[in-house]
Every structure is written in C-alpha cells, then in structure tokens.
Image 1 (cartoon, rainbow, N blue to C red):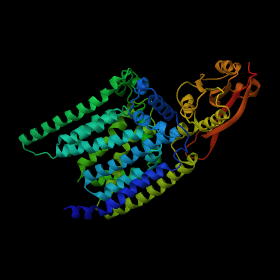
Image 2: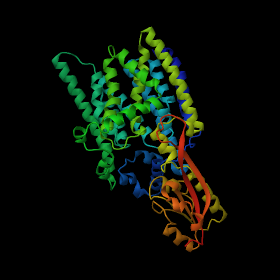
Image 3: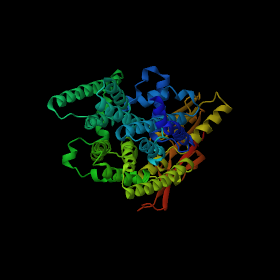
Image 4: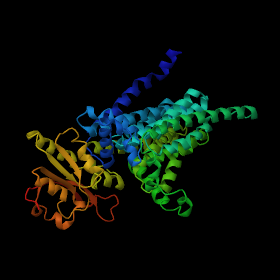
Length: 526
C-alpha cells in the first residue's frame, strides 16, 4: 500500500518541495526594496517595545488591534539587524503556509493532485498574493489561518471527528488573534456542512446533524477561549469600542444600501483584474460554470468564502483597500484551478490559453515588484498608499543610516530628531531602525508646519544636535520656500512616487509628487 501511494504521489513528492522553495525564494529577493509602510512601522515598533517590556505584551490592543502577528515578531525582531526584513519574513512564511493550505483544501474538495498543485501555483505567482506576502502586515497571516480553517472545517464535516473539530478551532482561534475579519471565518464554517455525507432516512439525518452541531460547538468554544486570552490585557475593550471607526453600523445596509456597496464591490473586482491578474477571473468563472453540475457543493462552498466577506465589507467598510480582501482570494484561486477539471476540449484549450496569459502577466508584474516597484501596474489606491503619500516611508532608512553614522563619530553626543505626526510612518518608521542606538531620541512634533517646531528650537538651544524630518505635504508653501532662511539646513530630499494627473486612468502621465525632507536645525534658529 505504501509503495502504491509513493508511486501515485512520486511526482508531487518531488515537485511540491521545489515549488515551496521557489515560492519562498522569490519572495525573499529584494525583500526590503519597497520602503516601510505606515502600518508596518507601527507593528514592528510595537514588537520591539513588547520584546523589551513584558508588561506591554498586549500593546496592540491600545489601538484596537489583535496581537498575534506582533507576538510572533517580538521573538525575532531583536535577533536581526534589519527590523523591516524580519517583519516581512513572517509574512513570507505565512504565504508559504497558505500555499500548502490551498493544496490541501483543493485536493480534499476535488481529489485531483494536479489541480491542487495548479491552485497553489496561482497563489505562488499572483501579484495579489506576491505583493502582500512581502509586507510586514497581518493580512498574509490572516489569509493563511483562513484557508486552514476552511480545510479543517471541511475535513470535520466529512469525517465528523473530534480531533478535526479541535484543529478547526485552533485555526479559527489563531485567526481571531490576528485580525477582526476572522469573524467571517466563524460565520462561514457551517457552510462546510454542505460537504458532509448525509443519509436520507430521518434517524440517520438527525444523528449526523447532531454530531455536526456538537462538533461546531467544540470548534467555536475553543476559538472563543483563545480569543478571550486578550482579556489578560488592560485594553481588551478597545477591540470593540473602535469598531465604528472602521465600519458603518449594520443599519446602514437598509438605510443607504447602495453607498458604498457598488463602488467598493467594483473596486474589489478591479483589484482582482489588475493584481489577479484578469485571466484568473475568467478561469474562476469557467470553473464555476463547468463544475456546478457535478461539484455544485464544492463550488457553492468556495464561492461563499469569497463572496460573503466581499459583499459585507463592500457594504459596511468605511475604508476598503486591497489587503482587506486578501483573505478571500485563496478561494477564487481554487475555483479558477477547478476549471481544468472540464472534459470539454474547447474549454480545456481556452483554460490553457488563459493560464498562459495569466502566467505571463503575473511574472512581468512580479519582476517589476522585485526590481522597480514604481513601474509596477499597481491599482491606484495601492500605488498611492505604498509609494506616493505620507504613508510611504521613502527616505526613512537612509535618514536612519545617516543618524547612525553621525552617532558612530561621537557616541556620547545626544541627537534629537523631530518628526511629523506622533504615530505611524513617522516617528515609528525611524524608531524601528534606531531602537538600539543610545543617545538618539525620536519625537513627534505635530502636523502642518509654518515654522520650526518649538521643541526642536528648545533642543538646539541646549547644544543638542537636532534634526527635523517631514513630508512637503505637511509643510505650507511659504515655509517650504524659505527653509534655509528659517534656520534649517537641507541635508537631503527624497522624491516620492509621481502622482497621476487629473483624469488619470491607466496612462503613464504623472503630475506633482511629495518630497520627504531631511533637515538639520541650526543653532542660529530663533
């Protein structure tokens, strides 16, 4: 039996480890080529603080965020010289775990190892997954726990085994400790009952139903217990108290259902079209159509795990970006891979053509992400956030290196760096790089500058070497045009990504850009 199994799976046993190695390797290439993003800076900074102060292990709760990603990172962040690299490495491995989960779920649904391998390839190369698996954000980790929750839920429904229900509970519990959208996984776990083997006689039907109910109670109880670990932190209430900062109340669904539903749903499709890229949508549609008759339960299950979270978020989310949809994408990829199950020769040929198109577009997109992200055809919302606006940390690493070099010349000299804002890209982005540099203090000094901030003037009067970093979008035009007249020395400026011109669609025309200023406050400042 073992020999037969090895014979049947020989190709997969050889190829799968190679696939996983390649998936990890290509995600590690130029891992820090994209500058630190606002939320990355926050998460990494939290991890550093949590690693050094045991009483703050639940620090993310203070901002209404779950702590699991930071718990993982806090054991690693002090062991590497580049905090951004290690933060993103956590997401790389989460992405690899998602690939394995996609393979397992696809095989369990369709019993075809080659289709399972294809579904994994979709995640491996899709720019949508590739981009976020290289960011120190919680979304890749959430996607990983999501696919594993779905897999164990299906196994539980089919086998009705307690150990599988417990594994489902663990996966769901870890998801709930990662990010709030895990609530969708809890909502969708009962859809796995579609895939249970139901006997038609009344007695067996009731017995089987009773077992499934008992097992899902076990799953929910375990997951809820894990979620409530957060009650050990002093700010557990913040997880719910800040809910309406991010979502509309449920009543919005019947008081104003069209806004922002249509705009947000259209954007979700656009992200798949641009970052999927678009052939994945065609393959998913083919998979839905050709498999609905024979595999309607599997098709409905997969479609629900994508559509239900998407439509609810589109209706209720106040802010909607591509990463908020990442945890739904694996199910679209499984559906797309299932298109190749068709026996129709014409459909098979069409699927092959669309797969080749998808592969070419994906590899080109991935190559640009690895070598020159500014040229990558990112959706407008993603390009803006990661490359153009204050949320982009372009120049921060270079400023930190300059400060380290200045400190090395005179380790006993005190240095103060004032930054725009109090939280986020700055000052957190600088603090993650200067964590272990003594006598260097990073402080936030506000927003909207028309003069040199008073705390920096006070600092330089004491003889302390003082610097100031801010984006031009935070500095009024009159002050920006006379920085050196106001006692500031421009050490270096960093150009951010070009913003598109008005009416920009998908052309190459660009307009004004933001500038990141690195300034020294001179002793002559008044």
